[in-house]
Image 1: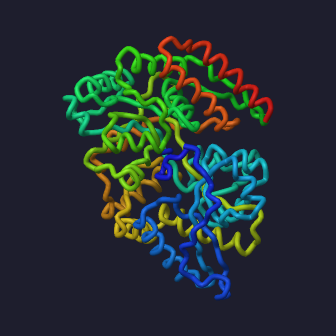
Image 2: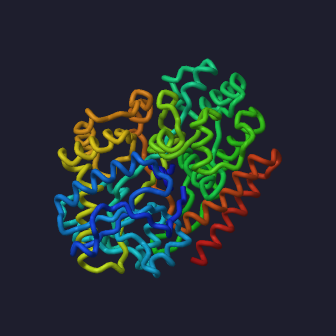
Image 3: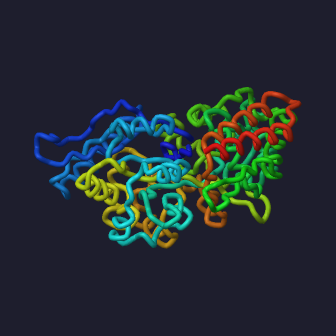
Length: 455
């Protein structure tokens, strides 16, 4: 899901591919004899500072590649409209798709194979194996460049912690501590101590995240292109019962139970809720798009329980349409390598990117899940250290704990439709005190298997 700062990295959540494209390139395009390369930039509504930063980077790339005219276009991902956009040729030449949709797209022949290009660039073996697996088929062919990833984190409002008599430098480390702190916030401040997403497939996304943190497996990959739903498991049941207790026993979840990625970020940034889970990269969106004050923000790792517990991760992939010609493919690979990858691999590129972002008041140093190996990530972090402008001390719980947690990818079969089924489950638990959790999970599991059998 989105989380990103786009994201995200919320989502981290299912986004939309806009057919309305706004050019921001500076070149003269076709009249100049240059190759026009249409690349995705930002979702509609991004602030001017983000575009100013992109304009600097665009000029840098075109100086190195004078035969290419980069045309930036507004872009968001939406699975239901993708096929029509692809068939109609209205996609950018380079765009991004979430991890959750990549397998389906490559299996449908809707993404360009870039195996040779990635290998020729020399860093195919540097990718985090869990992440590169999101964009490979069963033969090991590569259909895109993992460009950013996130792990699920627990976001908390430091001001509300202080107002409730809690120490914002000692965030909760277990789900029971989360519950206790949420109750304290609700009782002392009148605000929701804890909230969760429930709409637009994001409820299922977050229910899955917490289930995984309790050791659940939501779906079994049978290894032959088929999947078996396992939604009705102990970890998911425990999560739903936990939400029931926060909502009905503690009264610590407020009164808004119809939240998606955007609305929960808005509520959090406005100081109306104390804690929620989402992608670790959401800080940028909170500050840039929802006007949260940086000093209010806190981030720690999501609590985990049991030997099989993990932390849900996600992110997106820079890809190209299989319909573009060889010249645009070559140009697209140059852009992806320069714009997305070299800042992770090369000191000069890392620092130039960080400086361009910092000069445009964009966040530098937002916590992510590395798409490359830890040694490469640590080196890149050292390179950009002088430019970091986010309150990393307020994110210490995440930075200190994330490499001790086991990353788990999202399940692959009918991901978004299954998340939609789980939206209904979480909404029922939060709006009906007597909701039958066992019955809800039994039905969701059956409905999910029907989706999987019919795919």
